[in-house]
Image (cartoon, rainbow, N blue to C red; front, side, top):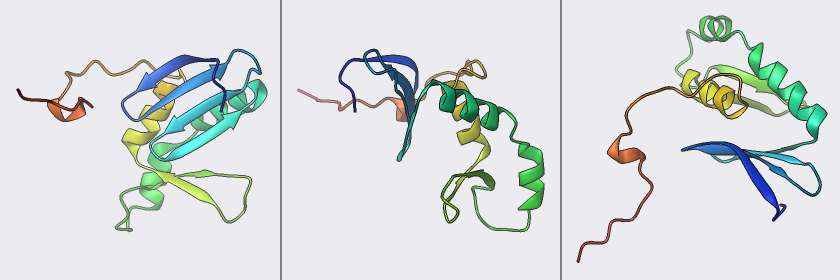
Amino acid sequence: MCHNSKIISSLKNGELSVCKACKVFSLTYNNLYFQFDKEQLLQFKKYVNRININYWLDHYSRTTKKRKIPITTPNQGLVLFFNEEEIADLKTLLLLKSPSKSNLLASEINYTVILN
């Protein structure tokens, strides 16, 4: 990981940054970490933007799994599954949509409270 990074976008569960020196983009979301060059990032943005969420929700409607929206990877045996909220977060991180304007919940504040 680069130490000369600029954060492009950030949410509670992830961030998109770019190394100023080597121009590598890093996307962190929950426990996933992706690295892209500029062209790969553009391709990933197109891929995420074209996901037909309703199709996948219908396709996997009879399963009990919470995550029903797949993102395939170059590794044939690895498919990442997301739910609607996670796809919306990815789109926000990738600057494909504006962040939602909801009130911050107390549970979303990542801060250790120290009582005197």
